[in-house]
Image (cartoon, rainbow, N blue to C red):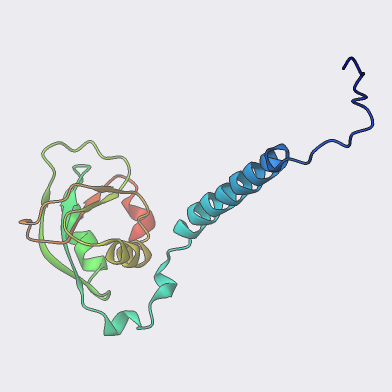
Amino acid sequence: MNEQLDLTTKPPAKKWSSKAWLIYAALALALVLILVFAVFRKGEDTIDDYAYGEDQLPAIKVIVLNGCGYDQLASDFAAALKHKNIDVISMGNTPRPIYDKSIIVMRKGDKHDLLRLQKMTGIQRWTSALNEYHSADFDIIVGRDFEQFTK
């Protein structure tokens, strides 16, 4: 009854849980790769994804606003847009002439129309102030940097 057990001669049992960390590491790596791919794919959404030319797409409705207080700037900027696929439905001034940089305000347009408008005007800065009852898809607030967009 008092026989000694020799624990070193018995081979260790292979357990599934001893290799579980490999499975968890592989899953974590796959998740990281999926997230990285999703982030980089989001940035590839460009106007080149369209199968149609700009002349075959509907005109984008905009309101041009003078954001820096220069005399007749909104009408001059609207005149520079007349040969593009942009429909200027009205012009005006912002309540305060404080804009150093021009900006596009998305009112009820979508991301593809925003990309089209950015390509046509050259204005890359944008913000969103969605309003389904607004008369235009976008507002263009023209800032003091207007000369680079009217060439």
